[in-house]
Length: 339
Ligand code: ADE
Ligand code: ZN
Image (cartoon, rainbow, N blue to C red; front, side):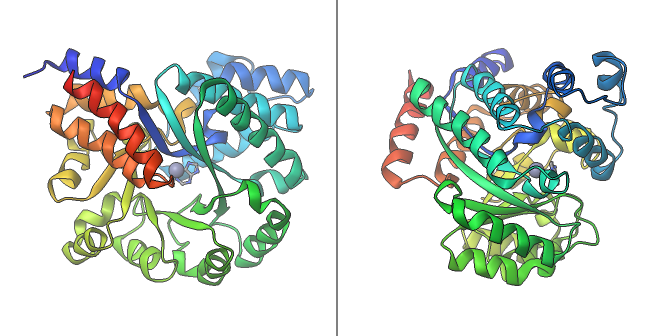
């Protein structure tokens, strides 16, 4: 049996895919200050240390307030490029070979940053990483659920000339009091446009919100989904639909969704045959990228080698990639585990 140190090493070395990552949540304080200076924007913190000290959250909303404040220094296409490229360089160094990233257009449109500025900067970095390292990607446009259905429809209309660059849509921001059913009509149009669908559900919100993501939005994947375990019928339905759950261990700890990593439900999810995966969510704010998430899980639980393999494999299976590409990536994964 491998030791925890050996499992952590294996997790670092194995090829990985990330399925739940907000590009604005990768904004490291150093880069944030650099871009703020370049754009002559004053951050409400005097130093990087002061900013980092503010990263103490009691819940999702505490975090979101700081997250929206941070992204407000992004103005130009170059800013979006630099942010995205910094993330891609980081995860390339961690053996991430495929990534599916969210961006929050409404968080920038509200500040009069045009849609094309955002998407062109992000897409150029993704294309460059593909050419440089062969890293594959998907781009997910996420709607902010604390805003109105009307705002979501307006955003979808702005996105229509760019649908060749957008693979899927998501639903994020403040979950409580913003149930998925609020956006049923928007997601129906997205589905008709051929976009894949995912939604944050059951992070802080009740199992009922996960049911709505299934029945009102007809999701292809569920982001977080922690609270699915509270409802056995819901668990059975997610199994039946073979939906992937994009779980975010360090995020859950930082936002007090779980009290300790030992109590994280991800192992339980695997034990009841839910397709759980490991993801970083907003790594610059939550203390780590993919490797640090795996490391925290391995250190603080009794995760086995078989479970580690299953988590990594689930992510390739749940990626929005052609079956042949998934098979190639999984063959690479198998080599690392069976050498
Ligand atoms: N936006 C960025 N990170 C998020 C999270 N963990 N939950 C909801 N909205 C988010
Ligand atoms: Zn998220």
